[in-house]
Amino acid sequence: MYLDHDYRPRRRRQSGIGRFWPLFVLVAVAIILYETQPAWLVERPLEATPTPTRSAASFLAEAQAALLRGDYSAAIAAYERVASIDPQNPEPYIVKSRLFLIEGNAESAHQMATKAVELAPTDPDALAALARAEDWLGNYTAAMLHALDALELQPDNAETLAIIAEIYTDEGNVAQAQIHIDRAIELDPENVLVWRNKAYLLERQGQAREAIEALDKALSLAPQRADLYLEKARIYRLRLGDFPSAVAAYRAAVDANRTPLTLTALGEGLYFTGDHLVAIRTLNSALELDPNYAPALVYLGMALYARRNYEDSAAALDKGLPLFGDRAREEHYYTAGLAHIYKEPRECEEGMVWLQKALEKNPQSGPALAGVRLCANAGGG
Image (cartoon, rainbow, N blue to C red; front, side):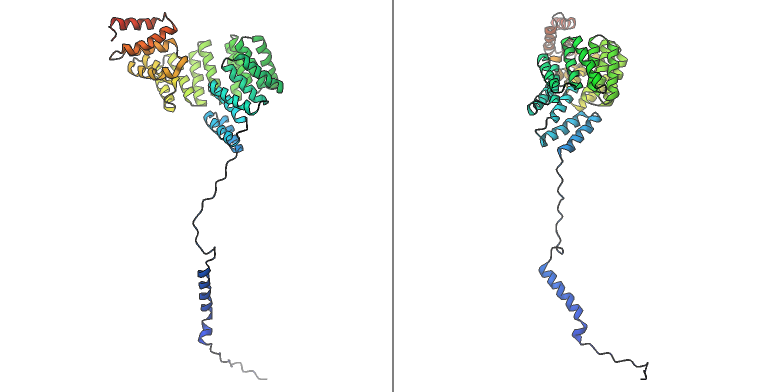
């Protein structure tokens, strides 16, 4: 067959409907979608993703990290969260008791340790914490009973042995204190409390420089422990009369943990060295952190008095002494009284209140008696 390559078949013409059927399909789909509105087509408002509830373990980790950097306030706050999530766990109360003692707050330490023992009566760490808090409150018999209970439960616990040594030291039983602290060092030579209590025993034995060496050992293990620097400073100042070394230790405490306690200790140290201007600035820094911190107010008043700023001195002491309570000494009271007497205008009536308190401490107080005579000669006003 011959094929004509030039032939082309004629195309059949489509009807009008045939040409537009794809458009009809699209319109039909659109109508169906509009009527049914499947979930994926409808715009939905954004919903917040639920925040996972933090576990007690995460707050424990946060507390331990705060301890390592010396931020005791943050550590206490984190342990409070642990206690709220896991109220039957004694650990937050045990650690908070230890932290309160580091800050010198024996009453709060006792409350926390008591709670820990209520939750876990046979936990040796809880009993040891309560023993140490009782010791700091001067309740030596109760302290020793709790410590011995803890030791019976865990005979080779170095911290419990160190606490027993501390109690014996406070009771004046040096021989027993020495036996227990030596055993504690043998069991755990890298324990901070063991070396701290070794220093305490040495200090009470009159071995001040050896006590500082023991504190240096403790600080090599825990350089963030501001309280250990404060103990060094106290020994330098009160036992050795080395005020420059005391101030250096106070500064190290502030560097480790800047708190009202450490700033006030530095301000007090500067006051006793006669550097009153820097003392005033340092004590004001403490009061910026806590405007009602009684020791800072009292020593600020003392430093201002030394600078003959009697008006501000009287104001600081008037506020600080009632908060200071039984810790106030004779010189604090007569300084407050004399500040009122020397300020302009003279305030003998207000001053006499404080002078009488000084005389209650010491009826032969020379400065207080001088203030009384001054007001009497001036006719009381």
